[in-house]
Image (cartoon, rainbow, N blue to C red; front, side, top):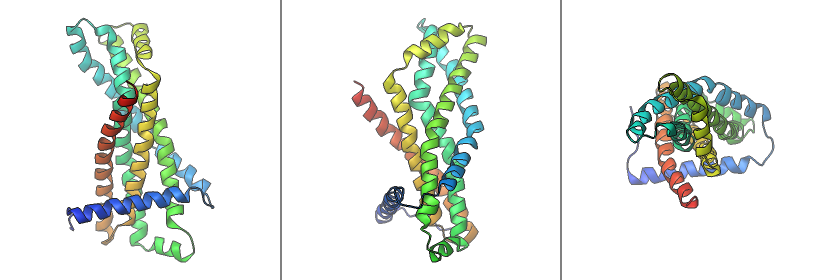
Length: 256
């Protein structure tokens, strides 16, 4: 198996190729044809298809977060603030990041393997021969679908996480449901909601562009498809974590 390039020159070229693909994809959004049916199909795959795993992830993350935080809060006599801690942690950080990582694993791998299979079987070359732009036909619908549906999935994960924390608070910690929900609601600010929706938009575009790039540079037959799929998930996950740091820093600067 060919190893991933690690030289500075190769890394710079990868960044250049990804940036070029992103620029071409964003520029193609405003040109006809718009392939509305393909966009709706991809939105169904990304949004509805990922709904179950996203909801389960959010629910159990909220439940575990409630159990872990309650021990520390009890030490300071602040167990009543469990709802606020869970809601703020989910909306600001855990919801967008965990949802994006799950989407990267489920959808990003699918995009890379699908485009990689099309490339090695010469379907993309046939598409070019027929006068169809592969970026417009293949990349743009996936980019729009992932960017638009990831915030929706994040909202669902946040809601299920708060519900998971509510169940744990009521049945394990014996905290009043009204107190938990009141603290959760009052603890959130508009900037928390803004940041919680801005992050998945950036993460969605990252997953789509990286996955399409890995799929469109596939080589080596079926073995290359597997390699591209792995690279898409790994690189997308790393970039999500890195971008989360910079976005968090940016949001905190403007909320002081």
